[in-house]
Image (cartoon, rainbow, N blue to C red):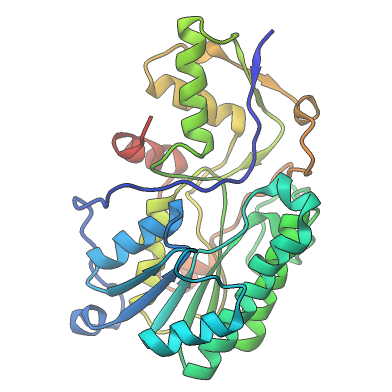
Length: 326
């Protein structure tokens, strides 16, 4: 018998900033304009939201971090009141229903957060002249292509999670055609223990010690881009250092891997034998939601807008390693 890893969305928490990574604004904005900017972060208690808050503060923003307990984006009244009370220059929406499997049986709930919540924010931003960065996902695509998905590729979600996130994307793009930016990301990990990298580390230690069955079965028929939340947070911060770039951008680390390939890299970084991991097919997991076979995202628009590419996923994982709670 071997241990199998379920691949699903989840939320984690980052417990500290990364002060060694001091940020400087890029592009035509000057340093003073960035320091004076006030940015509201929704979903600020989650893994990405905490990194976004830390990155913005490192860049000199005045940040209003609002976790779910302080702002429920499914309430249009609460959203309007929050924007009027705090009067931010920009909003970064990290709030989301991210449990991919649970969304299959709770699509209405997921839609209220991922779809209606995004619309409430976009509506309030349109009313107050506030810029919005809205975080979305690779799950808006079918995941059956042979090449990376371009930013303007037709969306064709195959899961409830993907469908609800696409509703949110369209609301932002419709209501904020000049000041709304959808930033898709994927395969996130960060500080905290509710993500794939931490799960692999935990199971590998248990397997190596004999406390759990070995080897660990990890799917090898899904390809994507492992992405460190801090790198996404830095990229979002860089975006706010420039004039609005409306439309869609893809923020993932470079290259691509399977979950199996990522797991082997994690085990190697632990100083353990990568043979503790064995490849399995998605059908062996029997998860409620269909996972994309290949949801790699293209980054061509960053180059057109004058941004340098995000680093390769392996380099990001190695840089993240000392900050992870493993």
